[in-house]
Image 1 (tube, rainbow, N blue to C red):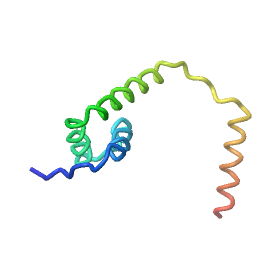
Image 2 (image 1 turned 45 degrees about the vertical axis):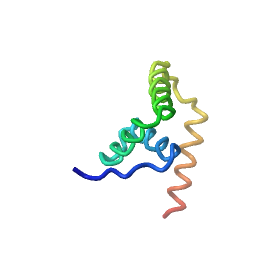
Image 3 (image 1 turned 90 degrees about the vertical axis):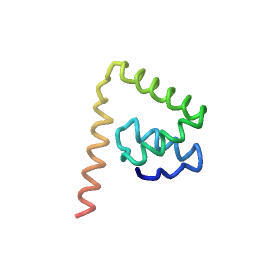
Length: 85
């Protein structure tokens, strides 16, 4: 069984929790986060709040992007692509 490095601070775990919710966390780092969560009630509360926030946001109706915003983003991407050439 691999040794799981302990996380030094709650701020490290906070980033891991965000990555975990996005399913971007490697297995060994999930183990690190779980080990910290077993010991830290504050981080467990933060995780619960993050999950609730994510679910609430998913329930909001989707709004179409305003045309001006879309044009501004596309123009910026085109400028960036031409400057890279």
